[in-house]
Every structure is written in C-alpha cells, then in structure tokens.
Image 1 (cartoon, rainbow, N blue to C red):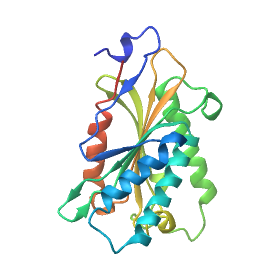
Image 2 (image 1 turned 120 degrees about the vertical axis):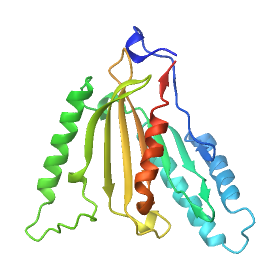
Image 3 (image 1 turned 90 degrees about the vertical axis):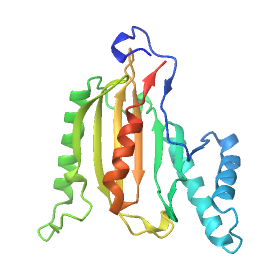
Image 4 (image 1 turned 45 degrees about the vertical axis):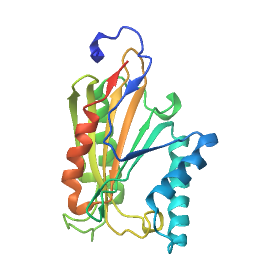
Length: 222
C-alpha cells in the first residue's frame, strides 16, 4: 500500500473499509431504484403493517441518492447496524466535487483556513441580539476544524459540526445531526475526495464519531 507522498501520478482508484452492515446504495440513475428497493425490503423484512413508513423511507432514500449524485457523489453507504432494537443510524457519502464547485486550493492548511473564514462569516450573518447561548443548540460556528494525518491517504482537513434537524426528511426525527467531513487531497492532482459522515444519534454522537474516524483512517490510494 503506497502512501500519498509516494504518488508521482494520479492514483487509479481509492479504497475505504466500512463496517459490515453498511449498505452501499448505488447512485447511478440506472441502478438507483433497484438498490433502494433492496435496502427497503431488507429494513422492513417481517414488517407487514407499515407500508406508509416504508414508502416514506424509500422516498427519502431516493432524495438522498439524487442529491448525492448531483454533487459528485461516487458512493453512498447507509448503516443498517443495530444494538438490540436500537438502530445505529448513520451514513457515509464519498464525493469528488467538480473543478467549478471547489475553490482552487491544493494545500490542506490553506483549505482549513478557507473553511474557517467561511464559518466565521456565516456565523456573523446569522448573529442576532437575542441569539441563544445554549451549548446544546446546533451551531456551525462552533464546528471543530483541524488538519489531521491519515495513515495512508496523507494530510486531510477534518471538520465536525452539528446541524438542526429536518423532521420532514428524517422520518420525523427531531434530533440534531452530527456531521464529520474529511477533505482529502487526491495525490498528484488538484482534486479533493470528500468523506461525508452523518448521524442523527445525538446521545451517541461521540461514539459514532469515533467509528467515523476509524473508517476514515482506512482510506488509501491505489
């Protein structure tokens, strides 16, 4: 396995190891519906009295898959893991933004500075005199942002933040989402690979993030 610094030409592919129980949902339009049906059948196997919830689940998967595809998504994983009867809801979207959708930045430290300035500007735009100081309130201005080193993939920018829930697209969930994004420069190119992790399991967010970090650490180039 080559380290990122050893590449003098662009890698032909990347690989990441995900846990058993993370379902890979195809994003290409010609394969998407079959994958959505397979995941819905798996999740609702033995449940015959919830057709409305199953249809809502499939509509949400369709929306997420389309959105992912439109932003350069290459892979989308949906967790089907459970602890007892508790589903460990989470997802991973891997994407490669197009050159017109990404700042012309090649260095992780420069990107971290760029993202920090965007977060600060966004926070100032939202600031109001009566803004809540509740530490449990989702607030992107309190995002964690740093440069880390992945074992094989090299330097990357890691961002962790919380965002307000959207019950209409989360099957009624009112818990904040915890998001962890790794921005990884692709060796010998000006492109970036993004690992976008998300979970609505707010009480278990720290444990879920530990899992996300382990998965990100398996990223390597071929």
